[in-house]
Length: 338
Ligand code: KG4
Ligand code: ZN
Image 1 (cartoon, rainbow, N blue to C red):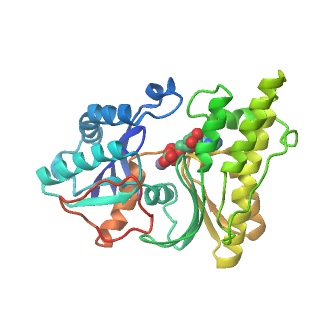
Image 2 (cartoon, rainbow, N blue to C red):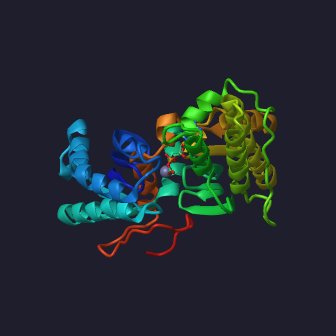
């Protein structure tokens, strides 16, 4: 089954064609990062307009790259939630129009389920059940993937997402948006013990996380140094910050592996590209004899292929939509009848 999948929830327009949920035939991406950089973050209105401009050409490019025609496509898939509402709407409307014109099924995909499914592309042997740590620009959660479309949220951030904090602190340090990757590179030259940063343990659910205190502590440190004319050791601050994020995430992963007895841990989302987090998960999993699944960096960020991968399993579960499909800025990964 060939699925043409569309992703437009944030600042990448992406169209991919994926066969049977596992084989990427093409993965076309038009990134808007340069466009938003001068504003220090994504400007929703600009994002929507840019998606509109490129989405049709990108779908054509996907067909051209694979030598396929519309007749070779068996279904359309699209990210319908969560994301910037105007941006998500562009993809949803395009997919609805294409499904109607081509008379093919329309499969709505939750963006975070897509991030998790990036692992199916990188690891053909991976099948649920497994645990997945989702760390993206907008979401941080630990998910028990019981089956392809049956998930349990073990814990989630109660405030900011980890990626959001990486980006905010990077911005105040004068680094270009999105700052996570640049900070990661810088952190490798730093001394993580130089700046003590907090690790919070919020609420009753031990799997829940909080990053706003960490973000505020880092921002206060930077502002204080600026006010008293102190030169900051930026690499060390970056190293301390990555360490604090990892120290929040990894013990929860360990606890989940121990409590569920599951021995498979996958990571997903852009922040999963972070070298410190990757190294700490690998080390922790080794001690527990757990198998680690870490998609290559290209599949960690937003892309269309991950939506095509999850769409296949949503289709098998009967989760298709009709022309009443709407876009949603927020929606639980657990899903509900549409
Ligand atoms: O998953 P993603 O591409 O978009 C969302 O769905 O949000 O994640 C983007 C996030 C940004 O916050 C970016 O700064 C962060 O991933 N990121 C990183 C690294 N590479 C990307 N954060 C920390 N370390 C990295 N190496
Ligand atoms: Zn994403």
